[in-house]
Image (cartoon, rainbow, N blue to C red; front, side, top):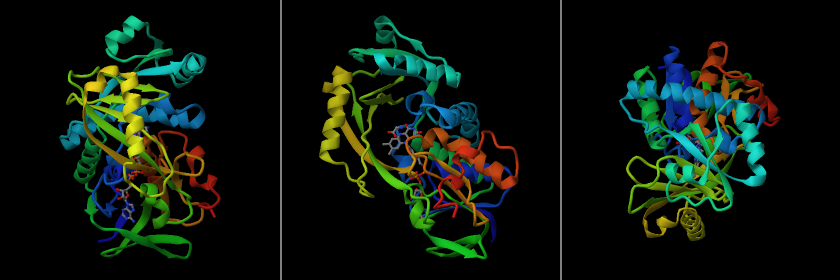
Length: 362
Ligand code: FAD
Ligand code: GLY
């Protein structure tokens, strides 16, 4: 069978593209060399937090649009898939006093509410969290979800809309002719498609060289406190805590460039646990359950790469989402689908078009 769209990679980005394309009526296939969620998407914390990591400009605009889209669409995906995404609203920010004005200004620019908390407010919202000399702020519209659930939910929603998801099928290269891409070569043969969307995360350059995407390693730990932890996520300069619905707590994350290694270095574990216990002293008695790592896909300028290749028709990029791919997944899916169909996109595509990287837009 020939497809209109072949998506390379079954992480949240590829699956969100597939869901959006299939819902728009395009014959779509996802090719995933392992299993869906095997890359960064299965390792992420799941924060939907523009105010934490998106400082300003078009990236902040995209992150805010993505948060609004995710908040509106999460129940739709839950309905399409029958999967509870564990979406929980509200986040505490811990900020050095000298950064307070900038963070409040960022929130005002983003149109997201953010208010300063007293010590009593903080004790009530996040008991056990020690803010030290940091200012505490409450952001009711930011949220977290469980990324592994988003992977399953998006996959099932994409399949329900008519997309085919093929796991255990690696893409080995593009099928090209006369400045156009006509499909992909895979470990099982050739797949013909009018459009190929490369969403292979940190491995994007191995599929279609040129974008300069690099892996950035990150580790998270899972702890089981004696008593159920506070409810909202807490984001600070020393890391972040994401309490889960099952009473466990994730603390993250490290950030290192060590190639494609996915081991958990003992030093990273020690640093994360020390920081978690310093911020939430009661975690000293918590049970350590596990730690894991993932590879964030980072473009040279750490910004996403979303849209058509400049010179090869039929080739699309959906990569480089670095620290915010869970947040940006649905928006990226809608941006690519709008581009494929020539429809008005939900956000300004220009800042993140591949043409900005000359290697890709050659
Ligand atoms: P991936 O999830 O890596 O998916 C790429 C897929 O492509 C993989 O499944 C891989 O197997 C497949 N693939 C690769 N090569 C081939 C090939 N040749 N053929 C077929 N398939 C192939 N983001 C947030 O928004 N919020 C967070 O709180 C957050 N926390 C994070 C915490 C950590 C520790 C890490 C590591 C990341 C975090 N992120 C977070 C970032 C987020 O996880 C990534 O930006 C996002 O998952 C990228 O999704 P992706 O689909 O592009 O890549
Ligand atoms: N956004 C959280 C992380 O990448 O660690």
